[in-house]
Length: 378
Image (cartoon, rainbow, N blue to C red; front, side):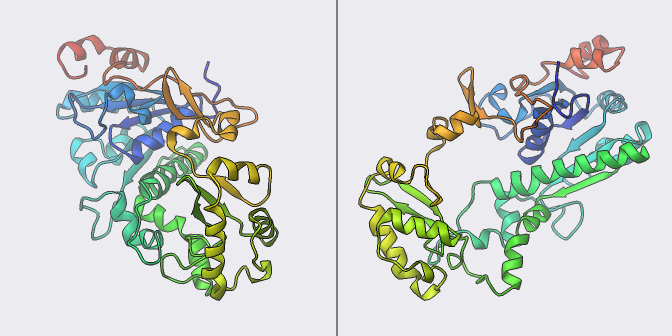
């Protein structure tokens, strides 16, 4: 029996890529029953087999040919029994399919309609193609990341797709569900990556407005400009991450490194180049493993930079089970954790159409066999 905090919540996902599937994966991790509507023989961007795509874990899959009116009608019937629907099309596509918000609300007025896009439903770029890197570029986020004398560095697709996109969609859906519970009325959640990425910069804007942030890369406290918040190479070519922002942590950093530097000059930018040189020279004298021993149990805010595969066996990550191995498949465990409700990984990612008959019958579609035999679903 599912005991996650969202147990009993029914979600329909109109299959997309990236941030939309990430958001519905989170809902599934938290206990929601997520049914993904896949298209027949749809080509995606995932390079492996569908059953290896971890963004679809915990979900069930129904294949439906949305070019056929009977398939659209079937999805609308499913939506009568759903709490949430999520789509990631360009603005207007869902409406042309007959699955826009108004059509859905005619069947189910309390349905929360989640829309996941890069540019949003409105604005001059709303109909333009784009990807994570484009959305974080126009918000200023990409400009802030990288070395002072180098080009902007791409932070994977964490800041845009998953941080500014999928996570904000989840927050919006949960908020809209709260309203639907009180009023019986669903609404559209317009989750645009450009909005979320901009929102993630709120703290940096606060520094900028206060005159405490230089609008250049590699020149500030949190962008690698400060010597006490940076990475340093070790004797074996690895790296240690340093985040000693507070004065007492910085003093411990200097003590553990055994270097001659004045703690009271921590925030004196004129001293940063000299201090950085001393810290770099110190780290270069020992291997990563040796420095891990030096800083073990300290408050110097120093950690080893490990690879994705190494992270699985980092003592803290391993003890908490933050990253787990299930049947040879390494993946992050559900997050966050709850004191009462228990989350779980749920089922492995499905093959498209794996649950078509089961879902249709369970959700009250009386003519499931006929729809399958005619190729409307499959």
